[in-house]
Every structure is written in structure tokens, then in C-alpha cells.
Image 1 (cartoon, helix red, strand yellow):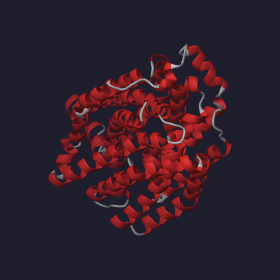
Image 2 (cartoon, one colour):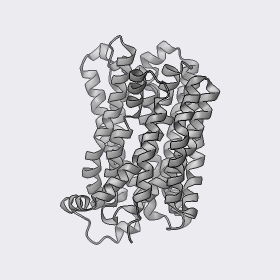
Image 3 (cartoon, one colour):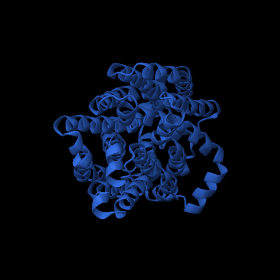
Length: 416
């Protein structure tokens, strides 16, 4: 594949990954409104917790999707797998966008929303793995970090797009209208771009690595290999805990944290999230390229040490004097740490997993980690409510950084 072909393929693959994260971000940004629509209780904390719990429930389906869809993709090919996950994801998004509120259909409303989130989680269990493995296999060894970074960079486009739409909607709609129906608009916008994404992915070429696989692995072989390589999967889980926790702290949780905890305006919190997405979009490819030059492990160790030294103090500084400027500064600093770590971690995970089960192994490690990291908004909300310390997200991020540091110290690339 030519250099131009790699760039075109990277854009085609990343576009679908962008839709997955866009849907996740919209749910996180409007968790309070979604909680009021589908889980009305009269208690704002309970509604928010139920909404965040439903948000997190989707992550519980990821390991199942990773094993079932991952093994299927390792058999049918990367290209067909990317089309399949996009189809499943689209159905889940449409369910969330069109389900009537609790006051209209009662208990059926939260059940349908939960089913939509579970389907999204099932497809997402292998979407990110398929995307990352595809990009890793079309890249050259000297540009692998840079090319794979576009998987995460595409997610930042989703973060920024969802936040920008949110800023625009809060400008033209009243808070009551946003709570009543305005939050559905971003989801419907996501549904409208699905046909374009299907067209882009249909034209993908299969990777040479998969073409040269003479006999694709069967499910039994995949499961046996996962059991044999449990240390690699475990290392991958620790590695991904850091990247998913830091990602959700600075993106999905920021609007709720800014408005509910720091008492800033919703518009200001979404604007900060927009800036974080744009910063990550620039930084991720830069750090991915840096990992190609200096090595993955050096970047992983440096970024986790920075997180351990600064996350807790930065959050205490922020909550001591909340303001738009302080929230922006704190989130951008954490975004630098996240981008440095993620720029090396995602590509490194493709390099430590055996090639025959690369999609399944990557997806399983990532999915099991997101079963914890994906609940970051729920955990942070609970920690603050229980302890009364508004800086607890910094403690949660520090714990994730310890996991990432251990993974970086014990991991080794798989011998090719």
C-alpha cells in the first residue's frame, strides 16, 4: 500500500471510530438531562447516578463483544469486521435517539435505553481493536505509532464535535428545552452521518497481514491462546486502565463536573471540553510520532510518573478556586498527560499481542479495562458525594497511573 493509500485508509477507518466515541460523548455530556428523561426520581444525585450507571453498563458488554466479535473478525478479516461493528453501533445510537421519555411509555423507556447502550457496548468491544489493528498492520514499522495514533485522534474529533454542538445548542435553546428534548439533537445528527461512514468503509482494502494468514483461527484456538497468554492480557488491562480513566476524566465527565461540582455554567464546561478535544487531536499524532523515535516504554513511564506527581495537586488547585480559566488550565494539563500516554499505549498494545489473535487479544484487554475505566464518571461522582472532597477525580486518576506504570515496566513487545 502506498503512503497516500495509507493516509486514505486511516481516514476511512477512523471515521467509524469517531462515530462510536461521538455517541459515548453525547451520552456523557447530557447525562443529567438523560437521567431526568428516563430515570425521574426527584433527586438530582440519584438521576445523575442512574444515568452514569447506564452509560457505564455499555462497557460491561465490551468483553463479550471482544471475544465473540473479535474471534469473528480474526476469521473474516479486518475490513468486514469494521463494517459489521459500524452496523451494530448505528442500531444502538438510533435506539437512544428515538426512545420516548419515561412519562410517555413508563418502565419500557429506561429498558430500551439500556438495551441501546448494551448493543453499543457489544459493538464497541471490538471496534477500537479492529481499528487499531488495521492501522498497525497497514503502517510501516517506523511510522506505526504515528499512524495508529489517528485512531485516538479521531475520537478527539468526536469529543470536539459533540462539545461544539452542545455549546451551540445551549446558546439557542433554554435550559428547559435542552432538558426536555434538545439533548436528542446531537444523537440524531450522529444517525445522519451513518450512511456516509458505510460508504467509506465499504471501499477499504484488506490488510496484507490478514491476507497472508493461511488458516484463520477458530474460536477454540482463540480461547486457548488467550488462556496461555494471560500475562499479556493482564498487562494490557493495566495499561488501558490508565488511558481510559484519564480520557473519561477530561472528556465525558467534564461537563457534569464543571456544572454540578464546580458550579460553572454548562456552556463554559462544554467549551472547556471542546478545547480539550482540539488539544488532544493535535497532541496525539505528535506523541505517536515521538514514540516511533524514542520508544514506547520511555513515553509510557514518563507520562505515568507525571500523572502521579501532578494529578492530585492540580485537582486541589482547581477546586480551591473554581473558574473557567482554572478548569481549562487543569484539563489541558491532564490532556497533555493523556495524549503522551495514549500516543504510545495503543500502538504498544498491538505490538505485545500475538498476531494470530491480535484483534481478539487487543479488544479483550481493552474491554476488560473499560469495565472499570468506563465507570469513571460514576466513580468520581460517588467519591465526591461520599467523601465531600471535590478533588477526588485526581486520586482516581493517580490510582490508574500506578496501573499504567506497572504495565510499562513489565511489558515487552511480542517477538515477530
